[in-house]
Length: 301
Image (cartoon, rainbow, N blue to C red; front, side):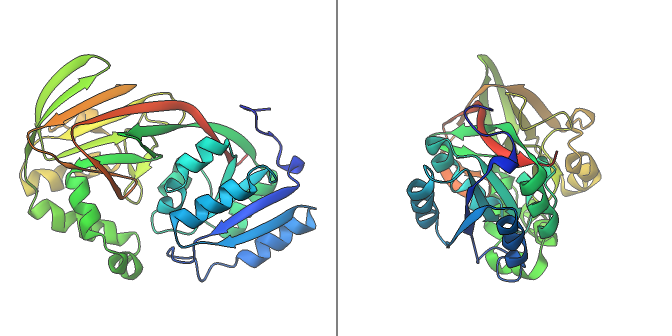
């Protein structure tokens, strides 16, 4: 057993599959073949098509006592939107990565190929992972203030559909051109820092924004949040340091402030938007916390 969850996939008898048809690959993915594999293995599969958090949560609360596993077929937004429901019902879950970035799947080494993802469900194991928390909302990957929020505004559904993962680069370039700096007061596990920033990221998972690494030492099960802030700088400096940011090598970048902690308090001059896993969740001031080993998810053996 793992935190009250079954640890072997061959113990699963009944699975709830929630499909988001609005995700980037939601309409074209061949899910039927994978469902057939599960059924041939003696597993009953109940399918629910959902385009809203409300319907997904309704299905989770309705079925959680009768199923052994919940499969979420969609992108990062699909999974993040039901984090609280999964936590409240203590439901083990699996991911079919059908989104644009699939950063949570990357953090968990879950293959983006649908057949291989179904193989993970059939032969994988349950792994306990952490959740991030900010002002009452949960997140898996990263929460942003500043530049990251501007990128989210630029990354419209149309851009995602047309550009795929490259849409993140397009949105980043448009945001960098008009980035504005702001003052931050950070308290990390009681230690205070005062800094100027154009972007603050608080990461729970390893990947965000289509494969960027939060921190090269960051893992989704290490019981801590990784914080990095970009100091005000020119567009040229940002472009020069882009490879370091891409691979989470912030310690090698003199224009980056980094730290790690379990409780992060953030105050700004004026309220700033906070986005978590690509969605608006709150405004500053904010308190971030890590919830260790909060959920159990299927990962490759």
